[in-house]
Structures are given as structure tokens and as C-alpha cells.
Image 1 (tube, rainbow, N blue to C red):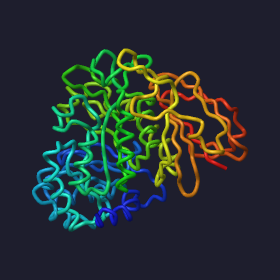
Image 2 (image 1 turned 180 degrees about the vertical axis):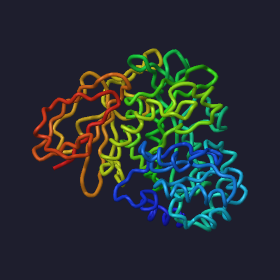
Image 3 (image 1 turned 90 degrees about the vertical axis):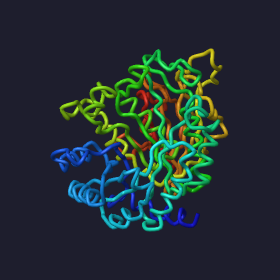
Amino acid sequence: MRRIVAGVGVIAAVLAGNAACELPIMGYSGFPGTTPKLEMRYREAKECGLTALMQSFGTADQARKYLDVAQRAGIKLLLSNRKLFEADGSQLAAAVKDHPALMAYYVRDEPSVEDFDNLGRAVRAIQAVDSVHPSIVNWFGRVDRMQRWYHVPTFEEYIGQFIEKVPTPVLSFDQYPVLNPGLFPTAQFRPATGDCHLQTNWYHSLETVLDTSKRTGRPYWAFALSCALRHKQGNDYPIPTEAHLRLQQYSNLAYGAQGLWYYNYRASPRELGKMFAQGHPFAKDWKRSTVYERMRRVNAELQARAFVFLGATVERVRHTGVPWPGEGERLTGRFIPPGTTPLSAGDLPAWVKSLSTPDGGAVVSLLLNGGKEYLVVVNRSPDKELTLKLELVPGAKYIRSDGTVSDAALYTSEYWLDPGMAEIFQAP
């Protein structure tokens, strides 16, 4: 436990790099060694607003070469080699730990509980050599039939066993909430407004991960889906709009995430022809798509507001709307997601006189950062505008989407939030 706490003490500086207030924004994944013009690809990722890429490698020499190229391009890498890490990653860590382009070691993605003992040993072996750069093991979120897929009855038990056995100083999880209509006809999935569905339990997962992060003192990262992923069911996920990206990332940040992932930034040519046939940041000829530009614009906005979120403590998260009746009713923007807490008047700080969203629902988060209190309101709908009625005391500030700060008194008490958008206010 002492090693975990010590890692957290230096981790913000390691992950942020040289930037004074740079939110870690990571792409899954990097490029194979045979990819021509690798430095150009790394610079392209940086232009998209990514600060790091998860990069697979084969040998320590190859890892160092990737790191050298990444350093020239001004981006960091999370090195990934499951077999090497789980056999003995200490030699690799000793070979690369002092490289300035190293961000972390990506040890495993979405393991089952049977893997936790081996993962614990792998992480401790790396930490014995490098206590500065974190080892990352990424979780999945809540799914139907947890017992079948991950061999435990609940998400909470899965996390509990992980925390007990795997001493990663940073937590990470993925769950992709925006889906095409007509798919996944189970209790877990219900339609939202318009042409998309939302998972009913996505916010419940965020509640659990936030609680775990607070309880253990380990910061966490969270994913957003940046492609039209296909499974066996068909076109499971829509081509991501800017609203879809904002909804996922602003919700992650409102729940205290200290780093943001995108899945998938780079795919193999075979995957681009099948799993990601449309709606990927790149086409099969490696030309940028519209999704790349959507990511770039959203990332620029998130970085402009990073000073609100990076290093923040979540005081509480609440939701507006009306209670969801249950399985017989669609989960739309007006219904409060299961597993979350409705906003009450007593939840508002003294500088917020009143808050309501009469035509929909929102995430309402209170953050404390650098001695300043912030109110973050996120429109939960991926495709419908939301009205926010807000009364603030004199002296409150309005944090605009470009990160500039203005006097909130210059604005009306009614805001219209685009789908997935967040409005942010600062206490006097």
C-alpha cells in the first residue's frame, strides 16, 4: 500500500508531462513497427489533441525506438506487451523507465477475476523497478450476465477483488453508452430520445468507480467510444457525433476522471474492413475521416477547460429529471438513470440559489479544485437540447467552452445546452 500512495504523489506530474495543466487524453492504440512514416502518425495524433498513445511492442529495443520517435513528435506512449509484462516486465521497465516519452505500462485489458493474482504479481514486479510510471489494467463496466462473462455476480465484487489483489496506482475502465436503436433488447439497454439508445447502467458504473477511487485514493481514467464499432449483432454503435463524444467525456470528467481514453483511434486494415467499416477516425487508406475532426474539436475544448477538472475533488454528483419507472418505460433524457441520486435543494451550495432542467435531465457535479468550487452541468441526452434554469449569487463566474472566464451576471438565467454539452460555473 505504501508504494501505491507514493506513486500517486508524483503521478500527476508524470502524466501531465511538461504542460502546466494538460489533461491526459489517450488513444487506443498506436501503430505497428512496419507502419511507414511513424513520426508523422504520432504528430497526427498530437494534432488530434491526444497527449499519449497506447503502443504495442515486441522487444525492449523496439520499445525504445518507439519512445525515441514519440519524443521527437511531442507525444507520450503507454507501452503494451501482455505476454512480456505477465511473464516478467521488470527487465523492460529497467530498460525504458528513464525515457522522457514513457507515460505508463499498459499491462492488460478487461481481465477476468481468475487473472488478478497473476496481474498482481506482474504489476508488483514492474513497480519494484519503476515506482514512478504506473502500470495500467483496464476494467470493463457493468454488463448483463456478469457471472457468465467475468465469473462474479456483480460489478462491485469484480472491483473489490481487483483492488485487493492488483496494486495499480491508477484505475481505468471502459463502457460505451451510446448505441444504435433496435439492438441489445435486454434490461440493461433502453432507448434514449431520438435515434440513439443509452445504457441504463452506465452512470451506475461511474458511481461505483468514483466511490472506489475516493475510497482507495487512486485516480481513475475512463473511455469514450470514437468509432462505429460492430459486434456479431450488427452495427451496434452509431458513427460518433461531437455530441456523443462530449456526452461521454464530460460525464467522465463530472465524475472525477483524471484521464480520458478514446477507443479506437487506430485499427488494423482488417478491422477497418469489418469491425470499423464506417465511422472510424481513419479510412482504410489512412486518410482522416470526419470523426478525426470531431475528436480534434472536442479535445481542444476539453483541454481549454482542463483547469477545472485536472486535480479536482468531487464533492458530490446528482441528477435532475424524474424517477425512471422501470423496465416497462424507455429511459429517455427526462428520467434519472438507475443507481444515481436525484438532485435536491439541499445539494446546492449557497452560491447557487436555484437550478432546474424543465425539459430533460442533467448530471450536476460539484468539484473542488485549487480552493475554488465549480458547478458542472452536463446534458445527458446525445441528441436533444436541454434548458438549464440557473440563479447564481453576484460574483459567480461562467467558464465558457474556450476556457475563458466571464462574469455570470452578464448572462441570462436560462441556458440552452446542446446535446452532451456541459456548462460550468465558478463560485465567487
